[in-house]
Image 1 (cartoon, rainbow, N blue to C red):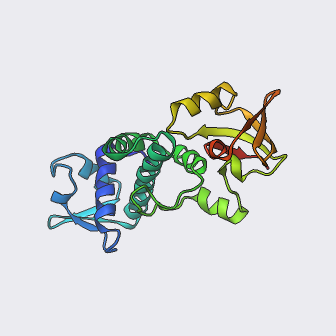
Image 2: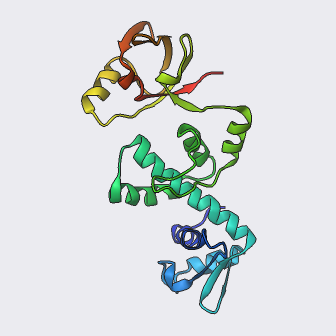
Image 3: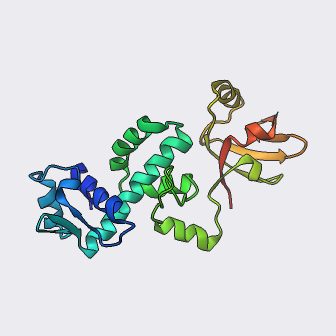
Length: 216
């Protein structure tokens, strides 16, 4: 179900304000969306909420939709911080805009890329998706750092996470780019890996900044 941005913001507001209380009702004036906004009619038409006596409450279907909406928001926050290294108010603002692009399927890919995080950067729980349950049942670690590899293991580079632009440039010059295949040749005393036909040696600090999607 594709809802308008304001409709999703209303669902988020109800979830955030009430997730600890468990009653899933909120005063309309506290949603942050004007009472005359057509998003309310959109939500009631889709049987996601009920509005009565100045309160807006989840219907069972709306509770599930709200859960998935907050999941997308908190995954977007993790993406901003963990991968793009955008933090603070700027990260929160960009996450609010980006979450609306995470339609069904995209959020699963991002969740898998982030290795199925359980909390957002603020410590709030991220509702698990089917991909999380599936990964746990299969013991799938998803994306891990190069330091988690054993000699001989290979995978696809998912992303590089570094706040140091010089380190980033060094790794990119070695061919450590998203989508490239990487094989760990040795892990002690230094990490030696192969990308393409070339082999490189790096220390553990730099190896921890290379995130890889494991094979098989």
